[in-house]
Structures are given as C-alpha cells and as structure tokens.
Image (cartoon, rainbow, N blue to C red; front, side):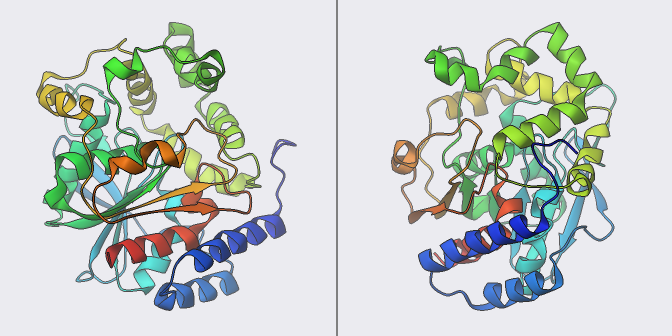
Length: 345
C-alpha cells in the first residue's frame, strides 16, 4: 500500500458517519434506511456480494449482483471507471433491507460481463453503455426502475433518463448532469481544466493504450487516490474492485470511451440517432437528486451549472466529511438515503 492511502479504518468509519450525518440534516424520513445503516455500521459494513448472476442481454452476457426481495421495487446501481460493482457493496444491503430489489451490473468490459460475439465492436461510447442497461432491464423483465450512479454510471443514468424516461422512475446522479457529445469534446478548455483530464490525452496515444493494458491496476490505484484524496481505502478494498479490470475487453472499452469523447474514434452507426439527440443536451424530466462530495478530486461541474437541466422535482445535496469521487462507497448511507428519498418524489 502506498503512503498516500495507508489503511485507516477509524478515519474511514468517521467519514462514513459524517457523510450520513450530512444527509440526515438534509433529508427527512430517515426511517428504514437509517435503521439498516445503524445495523450495518455496528457490524462493520458489507465487504462482498453473494454469488453473481449472469444473463444474456443485448450484445452482452451481463454479470450482476442482486439483493433484496424479488418482488420489491427495482433499483439499478451503476458503477464507473476505474471502479466496479463494489462501489455499492454497502449501499445494496441498505436498500435491500428497505425492501428494494437491487441490481448492480458490471458494465461492458468489467468483471464477468462478456460480449456474446467475438465480432462485436468493443465500443465504449456512452450511448452504447446506456443501451446495455436498457437491454438488461428488458432481459430481467423490469419495465421501470430507480436508476442511480456515479462517474460513467451517473452519465449512463443521465442518458437513460433523457432518452428513455418511461423506463426511469427517478434518478440519483453524483456530480449532476454529465451528458456530453463529441462536438463538445472537441472544444478546448482553459489550461488548468485540461490538466485535470491528463489521462484522457494519455489514452489518445498508442503509448497510453499500451501503458494502460500493461499497468491497469497501478493506473486505477492512482486515479482512486487523485479522485478521492481523503479516502483511506486499504489494499483489500482496492483488490476487490481491481479484479474486475482483468476482463479481456476492459482496456479496449476504456480506451475507446475516452478516444470517442475527443472525436478520435468512431462509434457505431446504430447509435448515431441517439448521439444526435444527446448532442442537444436534453433536459431531464424524471425526479432527480444530485450529490456532490466536498473532496471530489476528479473533474466535475459546479452544481449551479447543471441545476437548470432538470425540469422535474429536483434537489441537490452536498456531502461533507472528506467525501471524494467514489461517493457511494465513501458515504454509502447518504447515497442509499438519496435513492430512497427520490423514489418518493
């Protein structure tokens, strides 16, 4: 373990408490989530999921964790990069205890999710990832669900809410509105802002592609440290997620995602119409709660910049206590409470 993030269980538990306390102050109706969190904190919190399930959905065979009653209201929890389903390892049991059917899928290129055909393009463009989750809902016979996410997962939730609002009952999105386009990605930013995206430019090179394939675990650990500078995760916590990066398609999906954003890689024609609609930065109409931590070291917009992109019932919550980019894993009670609250909007 590096000196930047030494094991520190006391500090981590303190930040969990602070994240939860911040939300208790912000939201009423603590109820079942609060009781479940009290029990979880007492027992030290969950560290793993039960055996994963697999299902064919669209172009993928998706690996996913499931918790809670099969007839409970469905919630989909979507992870980002470079993370995996363990982003929600403590959120899922809280929601399950509150009666939700919780689905936590590995995105394409992660964990046990695999392409059904070797001929499929290893496409990481955002609309393709969102279409994957809609296909998963179809395969699981889920017509409508609360969808919540951070990083790539938040962007995916945003896209689903914008393009398929009939499938999204409500949404929780870390760092707000993240829908973009290739045209927007081509526009230069001020130098200080460009510096934050250093890895995007690294991935644009052949050296970067080879470097990520060779050093994906070291790369992920560095991003974790930079994006959540006050999160004192230990080796075991990191290793549980890093195993998901051993997926044979992982590097190809990640590289394509960031190259596509800069207009350096083509997408698939079947997603062109979706991308055209997303390029217009559509307003999201479904009920939404956005969240932001006070120690997010990753590039992210200010809440005031995106509040107008939500036309349905909307609330924003700032979490204190050193909460970084991987907010659901750093402040699981706060995230679970947001899901429960937005479901009642």
